[in-house]
Amino acid sequence: MRAVARGADVDPALVYHYFGSKERLLDAATAPPQKWLESVAKTWATPVDELGGALLRTMLAAWADDEVGPVLRAVLQTAAHEESTREKLRLIVERSLMGVSHLGGDERDRSMRSGLISSQIMGLAMMRYVWKIEPIASMSDDEIVGAVAPNLQRYIQGAISATV
Image (cartoon, rainbow, N blue to C red):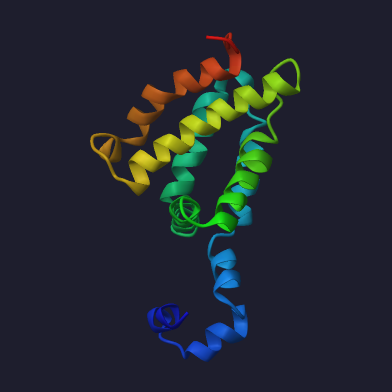
């Protein structure tokens, strides 16, 4: 808490006054911005033939956004070692990334398709924005969309086998 106060150039008492505890500060710092959640939900309404690219472009824009990107990075990095943030990430994925999709013929198919899409997008985010692994980190958005959107589109419209 003192380090956060130091970084914000405020008295630590002010941080304690507003947040009360490290846990509440962490919760506030990893809360996804409402505008991002709304943009994801809106993107799921894109015509199905364009959905893979639209989802990817929405996520690329979010990670590049000065307000949203740092929060998404904080959530992914913190979730690896902090139980409450991991649970928050699980709920974000289940409710916001997967939960609003209308894909598939039944609930299992819908959750499998949207789960695979989310896994691809989150893996890409880790490579590009958290770990900054080349050449993924420096590819243009158009290159990323060209390379990854067809795979997302397969999860949206193609056959998906539940068995290997």
